[in-house]
Image 1 (spheres, helix red, strand yellow):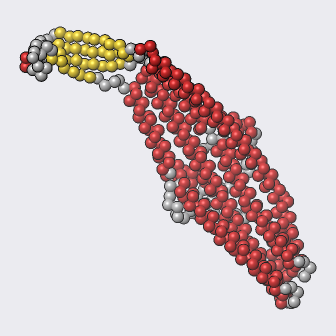
Image 2 (spheres, one colour):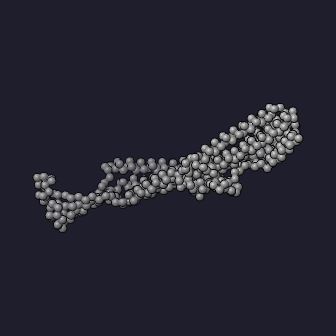
Image 3 (cartoon, one colour):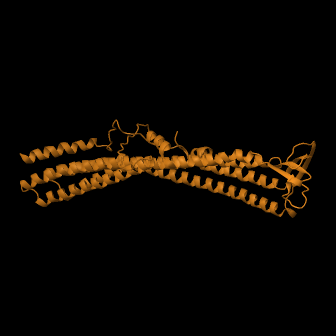
Length: 423
């Protein structure tokens, strides 16, 4: 009677395996979706605050570069007999206002350089968002995949409990050795230990997500995966074009190039002289009087250095900066192309692996376990074959749980490679 009940229970449980799918966690009201996490990360992570303030520092230098040089006001007592401090016997005095003026265009070029640097800093903030969003997605999907693996381990523990009951009944009826029951117990304990290890990995991943959000690492966090349609992989050429148009790293190097070219133009302006204007009011009532209607004006030219040695070196330096910026932009574009190609190949491979899992590996593993369990329950199968079928089913289910997370992480890598940030 007990054997019949165990066989019936095992048969029903095995039949339910046909309905096994990759386990999914049910969302709770306190769960956070990926867009919610991304917005909180952008608002709270101090790295964005630091980058934003660095950009503001550059922007604050622009009006300083455009401002006129500081004026100078002076007073001259001359001639003063016997002692330079004998002002009371001064025979003449004058007041002077001195203003230095750069050659037209120099200050504007200096401001343009700073403006290009500010745009570059803004592109670096966008690039920081792309990088951190990619890491957030990686941790997010890895956590969900590990939660699914934990569910697979729980199902494995339940299946092995069924195997234990069948082995126990067979042993009671002298149809199997007690070692079958013990082996099933060992396998079940191993599955329980795997549950503990997976839970530890989930806790670490949650701590990493909290750190990205600028929270305390131990703060409770529940994740929810938004429902979405099937994703199709666009042509590689289309992704390359998107990256060329929107990747913040490429924009960063473009602005660096612009700044280098402006710096070259400014270096060439050093060949042109600056000017100094001096306005003088001469008083006929020394030492401190203002009476008198005599004035003077002086215009001075600040010439380049002898033989233009410093100016030539400055232009050579600026030329080297332009060439370096061009080379850096080319290297950045080649690196982006390589990242896109690698991410694209990885996605293609993962799609093939997922198709094989869903269409062949998982159904075959389910069928093999069902047959092994039915055969052992009916005294027609080998216990080692049953354990092997159960282990193969567990490994296949874990692979099915992992492949979904790997696909989402690969998508995140591809989006980061083309420079896609928070939308």
